[in-house]
Image 1 (tube, rainbow, N blue to C red):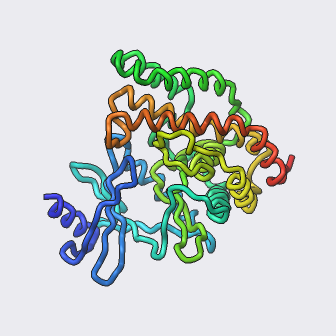
Image 2 (cartoon, rainbow, N blue to C red; image 1 turned 60 degrees about the vertical axis):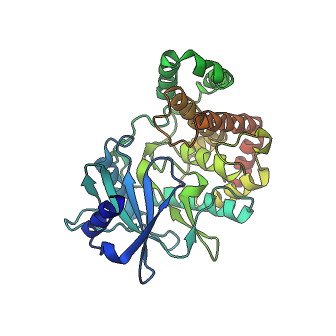
Length: 353
């Protein structure tokens, strides 16, 4: 039945379903994704958007369609969506919203890295993404996930989950809950009032950056579902949490979680190549962004655990708790590097008052 359903969807995107092969890609935590291959070797990415999470999936596609024409340059590869028979970039079905993209050949992603060149390229492409969008009217972009990185909103969700979860979950998660309260107190004074609102990717983890297999040059950012308004430190901090830490997001052995200073310097060096758009206030916010973003992701994972795993896909019962504790551990390590990060940013990014 799954095969028949996918064949019918491929036909809607003007492809012959009988001449294609497909296999699931399992790295994503939200959407269902398939790699589709034609007999001649041409490949596509087929995705079913999780409309339980993205309740405004059509607005999501509007945001992508609005920004994509600007995300195209000699040093930035454009993502191309296939059109349906009705000339749209997505297909609405009872089970969700489907879309297809042309697979960029000779490309790859990395979950983690120990390579300074990869870190440099990650910084460069995040900066390039923002430099291409810096003058685009952000008021057109709608919030498909309202208050996505809003600390007060996530705090409220966490407190509600805490009030409604069962006693056993509270006991199991006691350490994480205590850490959450400490971080909430530490970060509640983060000043965003002097920061410009920008069109942000909002999910710049390393495996959402596409690289050339042959040159290891960063090509573009992928997984554009969370393109919304935000602050640059969101994208900076989210990238840092996966670029400078070699451990997976749900690593249970916290001794393996690290903050590699050389990878951080390389990332900031890469960012410096496309950082002219940043204000002095934004640069001043970046070191705390590297603490804020792993914490906010950890808090969301903890909240999801307390809510019986409704948001993130899990392969075992306590995986969201493991994600939370791993992310909190990295946030703690990043917090001890605040002075190092601030000095590095000040040295490598030229301030323009």
